[in-house]
Image (cartoon, rainbow, N blue to C red; front, side, top):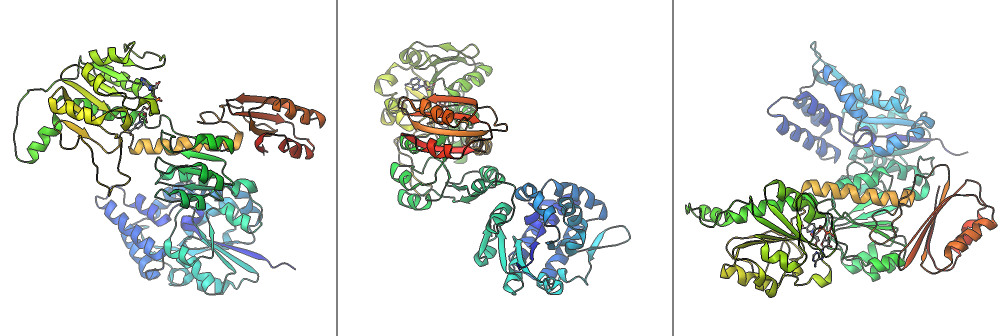
Length: 630
Ligand SMILES: NC(=O)c1ccc[n+]([C@@H]2O[C@H](COP(=O)([O-])OP(=O)(O)OC[C@H]3O[C@@H](n4cnc5c(N)ncnc54)[C@H](O)[C@@H]3O)[C@@H](O)[C@H]2O)c1
């Protein structure tokens, strides 16, 4: 007979995303001028306790002293904790109900807030093992029940000994004390739960890691809320992508690995083998060679604007959909450009530098307002057109030039040639894309056409400007001031020296490619790209993919969705439909889009179908990728 299985689950940072006492402090210390300092101390104490570095009892006593909490703070705390239950716990609510006889919460937290949270998931009150508070007459929390073993060092071990469970014991938790149960021989397996926090000291010891509850259930062959393949999708995020992306992928139940740096080609070839979704920024090159090692890759997300670093053609040939964030940082670039125009017209940087050297240089010479000046925008795309709106609202007269016909915003005036724009503008701002033909778009001939005393900005791409010629024009005084955020060659990291002809020139603002680098933009990018990828994986929607034919699809309702990517040769749609007709399959909807190289067909079919059909669809010649959504 199979052994009974017991699941010992930790509460803080495992069942919930947070440490309840940290949250309690946030509530009880509200209005205290020392709040931030005290909270920091509490968090440090919590972490040292979780990593097994400090005496638990002393640590708990000190934390309660610092908290200065009262009974009345508990209700708001419970309200808050209810909103912070771990995503994968919420998802697997059924598991907690169905296995409630075998699930025990063993925590050195407090029953007062644990019980109302976990019982909502069907966990039995008698299966909750935790501390309890001691109050004074005014309801102030002044300590804890000292007879409870869970307030002691190695308390969880003692608790497990006392329980004397007869069966297999699985412990899931984020803390060192959870690991100690296994170390003491009281559990068969310990799973370090890393959905909310990753503690190095715990991970160093853990034999099993559960990035989510789904993974734990999957590894133990237990019923789970989401389907097996979904759970096994693994994501690799490189180059310090904002944590919002991690949160979004994890909340889908995916396994996510985060690496803060980029990887070179060989490293990436090695790491990408089992990866289904890759997230990169501008430094990592996704080359043909890397793609050849990427056996499972479904999608790549460029967490930036440009996609030059990705071999999009090879991606398409291997059925890998690529997505980027085309306008998540548009506003950030525009705000910087506006600020720089003003700063350059007032020669602010030079004046400020002099002040730092103790020099007072008060004069209005060569200082101008931006109001009424003619702004010439080269490239009227996302950024150019947004700049047009903001600049106009500040009183500038806007002119633009673009190689394709664009919607004129506000009172902006279209120029019929680049030359026309260059010869009339007081301020010239470049916002063209980085296509190869734009190399040295602004060179000697173009600078010669510009007016005397012009202000020049490049926040687009470095190779677009002939920089030595720009430097000559600054030195001669023809250009009154310039800003450059992008350069033909940019240092690979913060340790490499920046070498450029513009260094040391007066009234030149140099910034290290940070036009789009704001917290807001990083957050926008980190939610935009994962949402596009998740939509593609969950529905087949390729809207805004940079390489797949774009199809926007209705939601999948009580149907199976067959997704077929093939080389764009004649007759594939007919072959797909022949297979379906042969098997008497009812087509509920069909969508097709092609580009020069591939065709993308989505077919929604009703539920009853012969499984043989899948084999036949996969076997159609020129198929690149076939998948089915349930
Ligand atoms: N500095 C930064 O941190 C930062 C951040 C984001 C974007 N960018 C760069 O800014 C540029 C613009 O970004 P976007 O989102 O507006 O791109 P976009 O693709 O929306 O717009 C580019 C526009 O330039 C036009 N164009 C291309 N070549 C041209 C030419 N030779 N003459 C006139 N028009 C031309 C295109 O038709 C298009 O309308 C890109 O080069 C992008 O890489 C820089």
